[in-house]
Image (tube, rainbow, N blue to C red; front, side, top):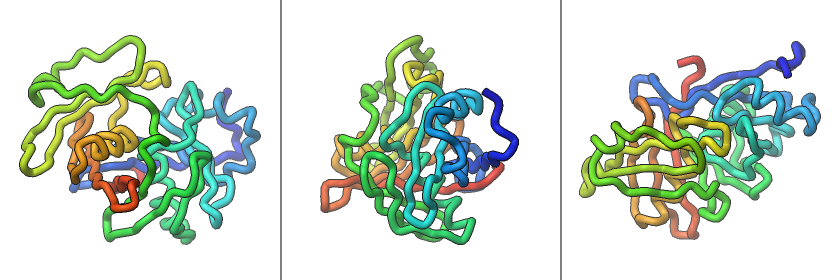
Length: 221
């Protein structure tokens, strides 16, 4: 389905590197209420981004998140990207409200942070490999959803990772906040993940049992 001409789609890149490069492109329909629920999956498939966000009520932070094949109740790079774009539009939010529940938002200079529960995240298999070289040489998969990772520097909390999610219509995801959220929870520590071609994702467990993920966002990087 071609994008209706009256629907504007913004494309911030989420979890960019320090120079604003790389990051995961995110489709955002700020006027989400103008797109009927029954048309959203087809539009997300047409756009082809790993996720597309429909902002149904900017002031209240109500959003919906779609991959090319499924709707997600929560995901990392869509919530970080939507929070950033709403601030750019003059509507900063303290909380986003995807179907999973209330997602606290924190603006910290260049970094945008959101917090979520592990049980909200898609169930990617987290697979530790022996070295960053094995991550770089991984051939990918034809079905399933996996997140492969390895330590770059365990003492410093630096990790190399890639994500393959063909079941969600994503051959390889450049930056996957929800998987980093799950990984930080499993490791029980603050981490910095270098994913894909050059994206950077920060994560840290919080005292209330949630995990906060954050990164830089640039529009059109």
